[in-house]
Length: 74
Image 1 (cartoon, rainbow, N blue to C red):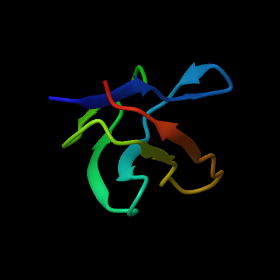
Image 2 (spheres, rainbow, N blue to C red; image 1 turned 90 degrees about the horizontal axis):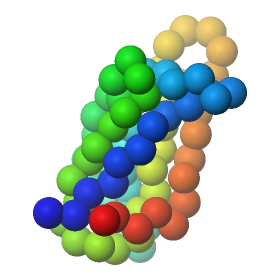
Image 3 (tube, helix red, strand yellow; image 1 turned 60 degrees about the vertical axis):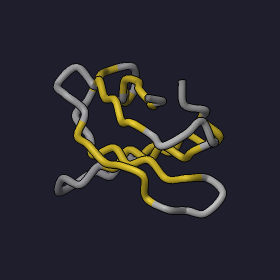
C-alpha cells in the first residue's frame, strides 16, 4: 500500500504535530495522524497521486504550521 511518511521538525527539532494528507488534484482529505515525540509519522494513501502534507500546530500560543507540496507517496 502506498504511503507518505516523514519527520516533522521546527528549527531542526522534531515535534509532535497533527499531520493531514490531502489529494493534490481535489483537496480531498486522505488521512490524518499525530506525529510521535520524535516527529515521525506515516499515513497510507489509496494510490501514488501527488498529495499535500499539512503539519498543524494546534496548541495554544505560537503557531508554526508546515505544508509540503507535491509529495509523491512511495
